[in-house]
Image (cartoon, rainbow, N blue to C red; front, side):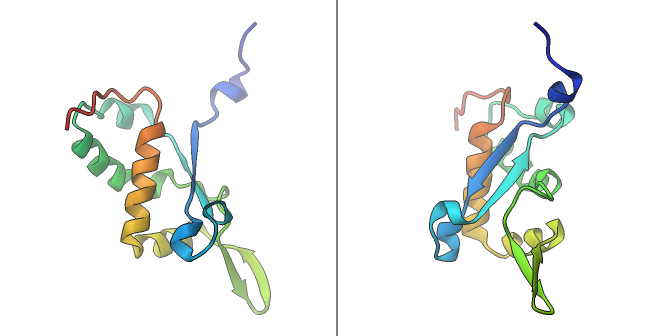
Amino acid sequence: MGISIEKALGFFETRVNIGTFFGMNAEDVYITLNEPNEDEQLDMNNDKDQNITKLKRLWKKCLSAEKHNFEVEKDGVVEKATKEQVINVLSNKGICLAYIIGEWYKTIPLAPRNDSK
């Protein structure tokens, strides 16, 4: 049995529930981060602090434009927020962003680490 090209090309995704940072139940607000690409993953090493710093630079690129539930109201019509709008909100919520990066770090597949720090 094999794997379809479509499935093989699919991204590994991490859903991070962040509702508690907005005064809601954790699962009421979420974002999804895609896995870093091969070069970015190969750049990971055994230093957790360095890896977290690298992920802080990558999260905007890896944020899914579609798999989140942020909304914006325009002229009485509720629409899905754009990726840029979500980035703007999260960039101004330091503790929430630190939580997101930490949760994402825990789930990235194949990242070499022994978390010695």
